[in-house]
Image 1 (tube, helix red, strand yellow):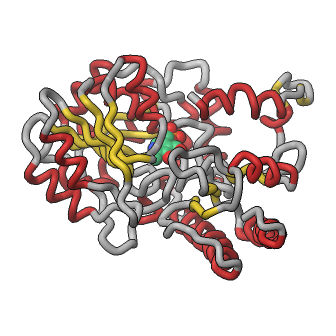
Image 2: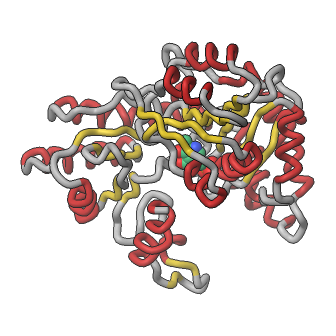
Amino acid sequence: MERRSFFQTGLAASLLGVGGGTALPAWLSASPRRLPDGSVRLSSNENPLGISAAARQAIIDGLDLCNRYPGASAAPVIEVLAKKHGVEPANIQLGAGSTEILQMFVQLFGGRIIAADPTFEDVPEYAEPFSIPFDRVPLLPDYSHDIDRMRERAQRTRGTAVAYICNPNNPTATITPCGQIDEWIKSAPDNVYFLIDEAYYEFAENADGYWSALKWVKTNPKVVVVRTFSKIYGMAGLRLGYAIAHEDTIERIGAIASSNSVNHLASVAGLASLHDEEMIPRSFNTNERARRILEATLDELGIERLPSHTNFLMHRITGDLVDYQNRMRERGWLVGRAFPPMLSYNRVSMGLPEDMERFSETLREFRSRSWV
Ligand SMILES: Cc1ncc(COP(=O)(O)O)c(C=O)c1O
């Protein structure tokens, strides 16, 4: 709930203001990189490049069809995704962001969820209102999932167990060796489902020991892979995500999915992004440059950091996390939020490389004041 109320109250209250003749809050008409007060948001793992030029043009061209229901717009996206992933269209379900996909599967499976601690908060939030039991298994000292303990918990579960594996993990940005996950999937009994969240896959795909769980979906109806257009394609505000799973599983999820939740502009922008071969390397390379700048600064200042395989990272702070975030905000940076139990760490998302150069200056100041 904390994250939602942040967006609904804190951020909204500080940013609301009526812009131009649009009657939109001012921050909605601000530049994609900066809030109206000049601050830069490094708190939501967004893509600072914005959407691709091709997606922008597709949206403009797509405006003429916004009076129509978007059902037909989804089919070409599904088709291209199926080709990209070497599956059939029947293996794909689109959603309004991957969070909608997670919500649907939490509700569909309904069994005990076994997840890392900390991990992406939406999943426990979706389980709570339905009183779906949620087991948190602390990450290992290297911040990978403790697959052995998760497995034990699943073995002790009567009825359906759902292993939610966020890989790379949010908020730690760390990866869990995929060989371990494969071993578990291979030997799992029938009551265990795997919800594998690969929201940051494209940032991690070259890492040692990391690969997608996609290879399972054709033969194993218990494995669901979740992806998004929000991160590498920069489409967080458009809302497009998807599940890749066995056709029987997709059929089951289709039965509870709401109709038309994916809007026409998201579909055409998604399609254009998939066709824009430059988008992934551009996002990846920009993120690498930004992250290297930040990592070098943290190392120079002797600040402990977790290895990152994503567009964000966690680093140690000194003192109170809220004080840290407030001081950052005073200097024009929106960072982090609390990720219990890791309250002595800040999570920072990458901006553009030049943002991270400036952010590094703030870190140097903080270090000189022992705030980090
Ligand atoms: C691990 C993870 N999964 C899913 C999501 C949801 O993303 P979206 O709904 O924008 O696709 C996020 C968003 O930050 C995330 O970090």
